[in-house]
Amino acid sequence: MTAKQFPTVQFSGDTDMVTDGWLSLTSVNQLEIVITQATADEYRAIAQDNDGYLKVEHRINAALGRIDLRCSWLVSVEEVAKTAQGTSFQESQKSYQPPKLLFKDIFAQDSVATETSRTSRSEFECNGGKLVVLQ
Image (spheres, rainbow, N blue to C red):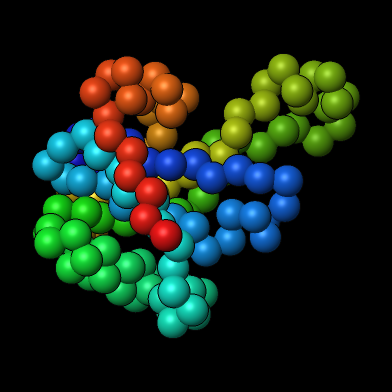
C-alpha cells in the first residue's frame, strides 16, 4: 500500500441495472473525479478481467487529452472476523465487523488501497474537489 489517499465514487441505486456499467476515474495529480459509462466492448472486457478498466482509462484520457486519470476497482474482499458459533443474533451484531474491501491503488501498479473515509458529493466539492460526468 502506498498510504496515499484518493477519492472514488460509490454508485448506488435501487437495482444493479441502474449503476451497471458506470465507473469513475480519479486524477493522480489533482482532486478530480471523472464519471463515465463503459462501452459495450469495455464492459465485456471488465467482466472477463481487468483489461476493460485499462481500456476505459485509455479512452477517457485520450478524449480529454490527459494521462492522469486512473480507475480503481475492487480487487478482493477479506473477512475481518468470524462470529462464534452459537452466538445470539444480538450478540453477533455487537461484535460484527464488515469485511475489508481492497481496491486497486491508482498510484502503484501492484498495490491495493482500502477505504479510509466517506464524504458526500457536496462535501467533496466544498473541499475543492471537481466532479466531471462524461456520457
